[in-house]
Image (cartoon, rainbow, N blue to C red):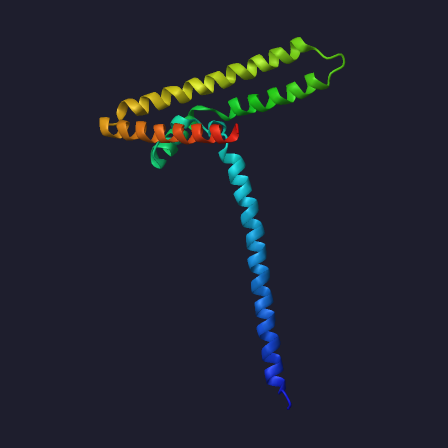
Length: 159
């Protein structure tokens, strides 16, 4: 019994398609695993990503507050922050090492950070003062859920 060339080509085409599909599934599983692992690592410390208060805000409110913050933190402020890190690198590599020089740089960085945190707090307080009582209650509920979620993660991570 002879198999025609048409049937042979068709069998090879089907095998090729199945092989490509299997490869695509395998690659998808690998990428999905990497993304899942990355998200779990990032999700362990929500306070490091942004303030829990900010995360409890509705999407539009959060972006409006971020826009306001960006408008109030100048490019010059950002440049100074970057230059302070460069100064810290120089201080760390200097011989002899000067703890006082590094402490002064870190003090400047801390002051700049405190200024940004104060601005963020003031903008958030102004926003929370302007919204209605039901909106503020819903904000409190979202914040409570976020806190419970963070508490659950901390409990799980300490086991």
